[in-house]
Image 1 (tube, rainbow, N blue to C red):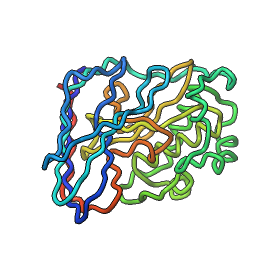
Image 2: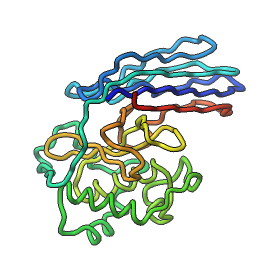
Image 3: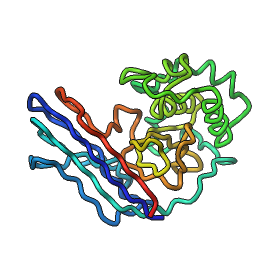
Amino acid sequence: MRVKIDALLAYHFARRADVLLSLEAIRTSDQQVVCDLLSARPESGLTLAEGPETLGETLGRRRWLEAEGDVTISYSALVDVSRGPVNLAGLRVPARRDLPYDVISYLMPSRYCDAEKLTSFAEEAFSGQEGGDLVLAMSDWIFSNFEYAPGASNETTTATDTFLMRRGVCRDFAHTLISFCRAMGVPARMVSAYAPAIEPPDFHAVVEVWLDHAWHLIDPTRLSREEELVRIAIGRDATDISFMTIFGTAELRDQRVAVSVV
């Protein structure tokens, strides 16, 4: 299917600041970028920060922008997504000693995914299940027990905070599922994405798990269909996948994201 993306970010920078953008769709075997364009007004030069590549996999494309005053950033793209429906049932977790080097780090706790604090609960609540069935059970539990509540969390909220509050947004649902997975020995990472079904339209955060020697998408919020997602960036948690990191201060003036299947 072909997905059309239009994103616009407008900010005011009272002082000059460095901005790191992660807005461009990843080029992978299951999503082919037909055409795309990232631009900034006024023109200030977008400098490519080469993303890390491991075994041919690009984790994201980042660009530096020097911003001051009123700045508008826009991104448009057409992306062909060839990923079929995702079915995790019956998939297996490889033995830890058989994990590829670049997958091992996704077993470890990270800034927002404090898996070690959720291990006791996960082991008690999800014992007797394994692999893809375990991941599905954990995702079902989050969906059934959490309230999707914009404004309930902020940039400091961890998976444990969300677990205790039982409320949050897509990044919080994702952090909790990732933490559960890592606590139970399933490599898991966070993915930022464009999703056609999101209402109101916005950037989205989902999860990838390593099963049967491959990464598989899953959205614990159930707001999107995994076969329609266009991946932007991949990392340990929200620290690595932020669509915009500002080294300084800025005031948001406008933000719009439109994603549709065409």
